Image 1 (cartoon, rainbow, N blue to C red):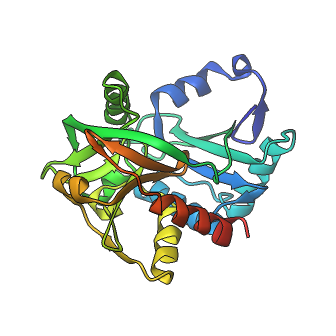
Image 2: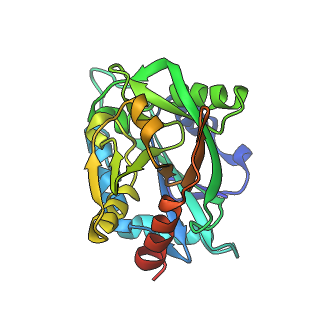
Length: 275
């Protein structure tokens, strides 16, 4: 089931061809909300981040776009499900491409729902490498502008070479992110992760997780790091809204056997999310 501008559709064939064409050809932004036990995780932070991006993309935002409007649509989608963990995926598109005499096109909003595993389920068998074919610009726009083609190729490259994920670099050959989300490394009780301003993904789980780590006396540094830092790290993990936490057990030929991030993230979820 999907919702497009307040209209329910159980069959994609019922959607008008004009709306489908706009969603296919004029899609401008995507955003995910995560729901656990009927609770939208970090709802306000997520909502204001999404709205900020919509404004920066110069979209014609409807006046009724408020938190209550989105909660109402979320509830409509999950009413018939017995699952407890969901991703609500939003796609924003414009009806027309910008024209000099009509550049503020009406906005089309598509809501869809996916059942997912609990955020407590951690992938503890991640094998990663580095994707060298393309690079990401180091700026905040890279955190939410579409890099879909690059990300898709990086994921396929990982699969073709028997890895689960690929790390993506900037033009200074510094690590920015993984194909699936944010990257974190641990060494000497210090946790390092690239910042959004460097081009890392905009991920509403990261800020509260970093704050939680600081409360537990870990030093957290937001900066890019080199491939060499991966070789000397004690533990590596990736984190995303869709995948939750994934713990790295192998980077190229180096093995990792610590579970520091698993322990920290599990405690964070229990203390800050499912409390």
